[in-house]
Length: 579
Image (cartoon, rainbow, N blue to C red; front, side, top):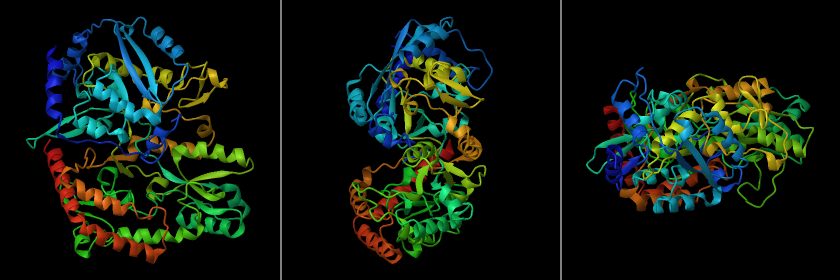
């Protein structure tokens, strides 16, 4: 066993049983949209290499790491790397043949031969768990945040890939994964002795670090009724009201969850108040908001709807009142225009003036709508003000999605895997080969950053579920649909621009429920009885429901959860700032 292999084995044993503070998602693009949890349930939508392995280790201690030193010569035997992705790929053989052709003269890459299998999303979590328990022969696998990434890291299942990033020996990875992106992928592992260990135990797959959320709206109806251009929430609301009053066979708004609408989800982060997926410990009906000091190093408090004035008084200025209940009541103004059957799984909803969708879902939703109503016209409205105005740095988030690639800890082919990924993420040509297929045969470029799928019989089309293998912010191509709409193209350019984002100080945190497991289960059960995200109550009833929930939650452990969350967040920030 090589020195590094032995080190990996020892560290894996040390990590097992420890708590991991790991970034599992920010979605964004969305955690609730796109290729996250929804993709899991669909068929369309997660010894011989010692010289190379030591090259990465040696680079990390020599000139090449973060410097300009030349990488040492790498020697590999012919190596097959076994890769498993989530959901079906099709016609991959021709792409693999093209890869072999492109790398034939490369002394390293010509020795690396990828082989692929896939598992359907609905079966993936169980199959992944079985593969980890049995230590099946895979060298690179997809793992969704919702599959239990943090727990698997805690158990020591995945190799630490830190030495391969920001390393001149792997220029493809260095170019495709910015410093912020690498920081976002870094996990903080709390060891049993109270110390922390950091590591990169997964490679995040993303196009944008966060998806814009908004509504597709009927532009043809806006013109028909001479409504003002939709530029803010007031004009959006008036448009909805007008359509509802004049189109008896339509509803005003189609949505299945209010998500961040009319809440300070984004804006509050600029005031040191954070709510995000990794502090959402009680469920989507009762979000927790965490207040930090001006320098983001001290936790001031963590509040929920219905808390006392004393609790809110500890929060940063501007949030020292129950703003959570306030916005929950405020958005009940939309109730008259929502579907009366919302929340029902078997109801057929009427057409709507506006329909909730993430920006990356807009194209598919428009195409579906046009199939039923070819004469309709559509526009897109972004909910959050700063994003709608395309302000730099508007989105403070974890800068990572739910989608990850992981290398099993027991794989003896880590170097080969990372050299392959370095090649795939090393150029637009290499990336596009696996993302879109063979140029000129499967697709053609539109300008510098667009593409068009060629019209092929379905059985001949190349398909790769990019969210479970190829996505990367450095290699973006917009569809023909987006390229043909200048305003829409600007929206996509904005979410693909790293300058749009700031890394949240809570990036990397994961709440360990071990000390309050019963309390979390009890309070979450009460939360899940509410229907606030569907706005099923009027304003007064919403406030009453929140107060009742808070009273009952306080009896079964809410304060214990708050104290534990604050303590863990503070320990996390202390460790992060100490490093």
